[in-house]
Image (cartoon, rainbow, N blue to C red; front, side, top):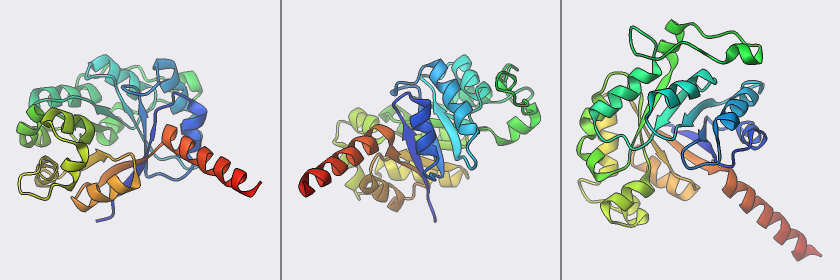
Length: 244
C-alpha cells in the first residue's frame, strides 16, 4: 500500500498555504477548527490554491459538524471536508447529507465560483466527487466506529490521535506504539477496510507518520506549516551562525 502523504495549514495565511500546496503534497488540509483560518481566510486560500498549476486535493477541517459550515467550505471550493468529533452513525450521516445536493443530501446551492470568475461545478458532479471525512477521536466514537465507517456517503474515517489519547487517558506515544490486540487505531483501520473507505490520520511528524502507515492508515498528514517554518528557520539560522 502506498499512503497518501499530506500537508496541514494552520497559520491562516493564504500565501503560506499556497507555498505549502506547491511543495507537492498528495493532499492539503486547511484547518478552520484549531488553526487561524476564519471564513475569509478559508475562501481566499481555496481561491489561491485553485490557481496553482498543479494543486493537491484540498480539504477544510470545519469547526464543527454544522451543515452551514460544511456547505460554506465546499461552496468556497474545497474538494472535501473533515468533520471533527463525530460520535456515532447519526452524526456521520448528517455530515454526509450536508456535503451533497439533493437527492443524495440536503446541501443548499450557492457555490462561490462566480465571485472569482470560475464556473460552478454541476450538482451531480459534486455528488460524485466530494469527499466527506469524519473524525473518530473519542472513546465513545471508537465504540461506534463500525457503524460510522458503514454510513453511506462517508469516504474517510480520520483519527486525531492526540484527542483520542486524551479521551482514553493515555499518552499519544503509548497509543501509537501499543501492539496489543484491540488497539483503537487498528479497530479504525479494520472498520475502514471492511467498508471500502479510507483510513486517515493526523501525524504531524515523519516519525508518527511511519507508525500510522505501518498500522495501515492510507491517508496521513505530515507537514504542518507552523512547524516546518519554525524548523527550517531554526536550521538555517543555526547553520549560518555556525559558519560565521
